[in-house]
Length: 558
Image (tube, rainbow, N blue to C red):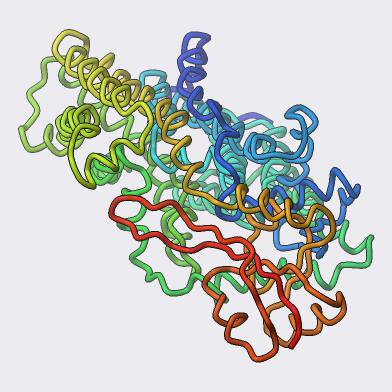
């Protein structure tokens, strides 16, 4: 069953060439450089903890987080992290982040592919590079988190729908169903709902009768998506954990949307400013690109779909009662396509000798010029910073190879301005994105070396193990997966009564690890005699006061 759309609804339908793929691969390099350099941070300890239990305990079908069942997330990312550990020398930060980096790289290619199909090859490579060099794309692709995998599956499913625009094939339906079902095993419902919503809105607005006539194929593909979607719940039921798994699934994927138990303080306006901020530096161009997309919405099928997909994604995440800055990541492929297409329109007009109003040129190109005016100033600061007195100099000296960072900033700005004066506007567009790659490479090496010095869990855990080489750790109010990952499983006591019972069971002096913010609860309790064995503090940095992190106590009952 095939139906070719008429000329009024046609899209360029172009495909990437080998040269395009090579250029896109270059854009992905910073996502993988020194990927395991920084010790785990944020919630990465949970991913590494579950992956470690899969390797050491064989709990591949029962996610175990430091001794407790943990069904808050589906199994796919944990499987990928544990699988990667066979090639990285064990479960470590590299193994945990590798699936996310690969997802980010895949999304670069998927974004470029959709841009080529919708708006032509001239937009494709810039769209991929813009996605790769957006701040949050780079950051979350280098983080052991399900979020970028969620973006990759959602984008891949929509890319299959895009393939139906120039010509529908029955296999498109089954590929779409498989991708949304598998994507739901990355983070949950978003990878299933978002592609369906985009496809539904586009089909209704553009009156896709060819899809309506394909209802038998759609009905046949529903079991594929449903079976993959229910995989984690089926696995949990087979191991007698259905009630716990369903409770966590409902809480994370349904209750969170309408009545969240956390992250409910951000208003509906959050993504109006967080999306451009997370998408920097291209977020400066995003408002103008959105205006262009709205103006072209009814004039071109490719623009129609790209703007519709962006609008639906933005509306769905804004409508959810649970909002966090990085939840909006699935909008990034469409942001990249809209920005690349807007810049391409300006480049095409300039090459054709068309007169563009000064206001229009500044609206689209002005933000990029601003970045490369500020850039050299930042380069000067990096070059002379280590020689400055006081806190400015101390801050600059804390960054290794600051002089190299300054040279990279200058080089990137020089490449931008040379291309602007001598190269064709379309080449200048690609150089604008490519000039950011050296800065991300510097961030992945010297920048991440600084970040690693800011975290104390690895050093503290090593020191604790010198005092207690073996045995489970006794924790007091340490709800911190990073520390658990470094120290290992242990008994967690969330109040002094539970700590008293645990100390009494062990008898005599007991080593207890506590978060520094709760140290008074131990030191001032009439139940214990507690002496400090070891303390750790976050590094003393310019413009930030030194802050205690963790304390190791030797505790006995009075």
